[in-house]
Image (cartoon, rainbow, N blue to C red):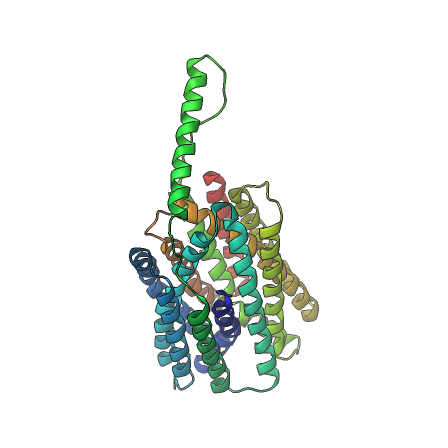
Length: 400
């Protein structure tokens, strides 16, 4: 039940993920404002992510930061509904981003401390699958509100109300863990395992036994580079994606609600991916699955370029929808394994580092994506994103 508040939060942001870019373009008439808004918000949230991660581990209190995050988001979204121009909207979005990230590090720590190390991947998969269903329902709400002709204020008030529901659900169901030691045990376990392997190799060498084993410590820096490159590619690809699909739908003379419907498929792929991440391929290491899912996303991104060349817009939309469905599944598998691995590698007291690294890549991609789309066209967005996914794959391959 402790996940219920996050479910309502994801419902609101599922709706906002498509609604806000379309609303900003309608207010400003330019994709560049979408990039400015996203980049300013994410760059501002990078130090905030590190701060919230540090302070929650320092105080060993997690619930209070989750409650604060949901309550402030509810208030800011209400102010969204009375914003009079795009500049004020951007400022409010930056403020929202600072408090949006406040619940992320505490949530990751809660999962890591409430479950044993062996169950981390299943626990993260269960959480992400549950909340992804909330995101999907939010997109469905977007289809309904668009079809029923909801105005901007009503849509934003709905999102604000969902965050009030998230606040009360977290207030009643989230509890701080009584004991906080699981991540420390994992660090000790990894150090002992590394030492044992070194002693074992040394003994074989001394005894004259041939061995091809190598003592190799995991390279946190390379892993972090892979996280940044992946989030850069993902943000570059998806920040202008609602506008791309909106233009494609307009060319095919489809209603605007089709944009939400296609993102419902993307989210549905994510739900399936989270289910598979928790249930399948138990014998495979996290880093192997991370590399494979990143490579798959890169190849799918290049397929978007081919879809743009089709002369029939309705066929192109169908293919884009299928590609987004598979992109969602691949992202889910990547995220679960990256989260589980990051909780092993990132030192205690730096729980926000994962969100900081993701934020660095996302901030860069969220500005560059709309800029490239506005200046040069979407084909260059897809090309650059695909290349970045391949670079991220190379980084994770070196890390392995």
